[in-house]
Structure formats: structure tokens, C-alpha cells
Length: 271
Image (tube, rainbow, N blue to C red):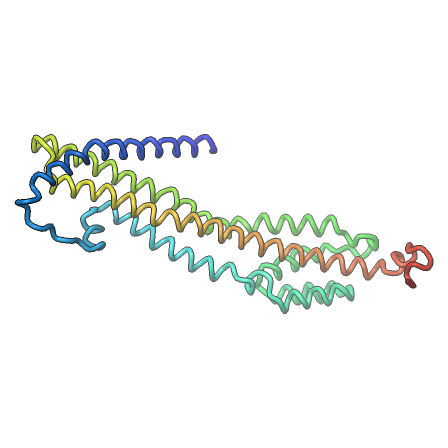
């Protein structure tokens, strides 16, 4: 997979380099002819950004669709990756308070009534608490279930975040496709007219530049969104896991409080 991605990046760099070289070759001829005809030419009409996007042709359509998808995903993930949906403050406090008093069943009941990530995790893992194991309360089984729950649930959330990466890869490639098509049209125009016609050549180069710019405008925010939402998701998952394990620690500490106190050297606890 890594070799495939590096191959795509190398091909992209070669295409960009080719575009720069071609533009460097064509541009001097265009500017020379424009300078020679500047005295007799009528002033060119200025175009708005929307006019340039329309002139760029159908290559801007898939880029526009990707931009809409990116915005939709950003809104969706913002709503989905909220603290209320993952680690509600009230549920967290209730679980820790119950576990400090070793009320495991109360913690399970409270978690089962809450559809949050933490609620589903606790209601899945805490039934494995082993009251016969007074030393650890079955910590190994509980922690394994927490890990299994995270593996099952995390893929569903990460699939939505991963679409940002797809958009970040697809948008520049579509833009580069438009760039290549624009440069082909530019040289076709030169070949058919027997020289560089500035008016026709400028339109084709505009196609090339606008599609490239459009792809980058969509790709760059997508990259930022991918890492922002991924880091936020990992942080929320870690907080939920820490809360569940912290509750188990409270219960173990309460059950073994007398034994732990007995292990303290005489005089230390009084100090």
C-alpha cells in the first residue's frame, strides 16, 4: 500500500513538473505576441471568478461535487464526534461514584440507559467483573472486552473520517487531469493555427490552471479535516477507555482497602 501511494505521488510530481516546463516554453511566445500587438488590441474584458470556473469546463463538476461532500462530512463529523455522544459528564460521574462504592450493577444499569460510546462500553465490559476475584475483580477480562468493543466500534467512526483522505487524493488528481487536458488543447490550438494565438491559448491555459487550483482548494482543507477529526476521535475514545478502567480501579481499591492499609509500614499512615 505504501509503495502504491509513493508511486502515485511520484507520478503526480512528474505531471506537475511537465506542466511547469510546458508553460515556461509557451509563455514567452504568448507574451511576445501580446506585446507586439498591444498598441492595436482592444482592452480585454475582465472575468469574474465564476466565469473562470465555468470556462474551466466539466472538470470542475466532479471537483465541485467533492467540495460539497467535504463540507457535508465536516458537519456530520462535528455533530457525531461530540463529548455528549462519547463521554457525557453526568454518566462519567455516576459510573465513577458507583464503582467507588463497588456498585457494579448500578453502573451497568446507568450505562445501559445511555446510548453514548461510554455507556455502550461499560454495559458491555462491566458484566465481566468477577466478584470472586477480590484481588483484581477480573481486570484482565474487563480490559480485553473494552479493547474488543473499541475495535468493533471504532471502524464505523473511522470510515466516515477516512472519506476525507479519499477526497484529498481524488481532487488533485482530477485537477491534474484537467491540467493535462488543457495543455493538450493548447498545443492542438498552436498546431492548427500555425502559431500561438493568444486568445485561444489563454483559454486553454486557464482551463489547466483553474482545474489544478480547484483540486487543491478542495484537497488542502480535506487533509486538515482528516487529521483534526481523527485526533478528536482518538481523544474521545481514550477518555472513554480511561473512564471505564478508572471505575474498575476505584472498585478494586475499595475492595482491597484494608489489605492495602495493612501493607503500609507502621507509622507511615499516621504521618
